[in-house]
Length: 586
Image (cartoon, rainbow, N blue to C red):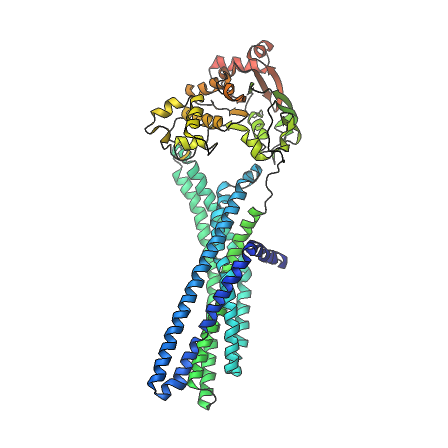
């Protein structure tokens, strides 16, 4: 279905907004390219003078002057043309680079809920593939198009001045070219949209498989993943072929119309030469001007092809740039104090019922509090709410007596360090990964943080110590080693709150020792950290200052390990079940 005019105008306005900061450079480049185009219109005059004046005269001096003028002119034109070409390309690269950085920065600052609505590979495609697709449109539209339009006006003026009757052919040919281009505009726009979407889906499928390559290999799922990618690839190829049919037909009709225009001029102009009202030199120059005119006209027409492809990409990039960012407060100073959940209720977007219901509890400064409960009871959701990945439907979360919504997101998230069940490490060295929390940290500070996390010992045994490359996602380290590096990173962050989110689930005793270190105050005594531990192994949390027991999003019990066993409630039943069967909680 064709786009309404307001949507097409909005696309043009979006392009204008992107180019507005560069309007000065656009103007200068347009003038330079227009100057180059103007110089190009002088060329046919050399042919006219040669045929009508120099050759008939037979004078050597005129031949020498013609050769010198011809050589000097085209040397000048080559220099101007090269400068325009290079500066235009450099200008376009600068704009595309700026847009790419703006889009990537925007992507990182989108609300977490946005990432649940679209696959990460598709979003990355907006930043890389879609931004790259803007390059041809911006270069052609911001600089070359102005030169082409200026060239058309100059050539039209010259051919009308030379022979207005012969120039009337253009009044027939040019509208026909415009009609052909207009006819194929909407099909090309729709096809370009389908292609951009398919590129996003293809990127998403590949990113998902590569990002989970160990799972793919463990299930011998390579053929299935190859088939999934093949389906997207085949669809992409088919959409491109469909679009190419329209592009090919449009280009063929434009070329055919242009050639018919040349033929008409050749026949009518030849008749005028035969009648003596037009010289051979003038006809030759006119034909050259006609070719020269049709070149810019066809470039303007073919620009529609680039325009539709670029506009489809621009729509996806603009949708990213126009997405609302996370809401945050103004305060940049995080006070010390207790963590308070006050009657908090929360429902995930699109979920049928709340995952947290009227939840209230307090974690004192420098206290260690454990959260336990069956899967789905809301334990991990609490950590997401604290970091404001999501906001409560009702109730308040306070730190130091102030609602966390009053703080800037940077201030809040710098105060909270989270070590998830499977810590995320980056390719690079051990030192790089610990320093990720604070890029300006010194080597001695990195070692200090590793010592607190009991990671210094195994790090020094690595082939190159702290400079050992750990591979993508830390594949060269064990689960416990990765967690200790993540703990060191959290310590170096200078956080107020340390959250260990199910860090021992399905892992070894080395990982369990990490939790024991936290519960025994090995971390908090250095930083006065408030520590929240979510653990499956109840043996790891027996020394916590307080244990909160959750069920179906509600707080059902609270107390120390001994108190909860005496109470003989849910915690006692879970404890008995785990130690009787020697299995983890579900």
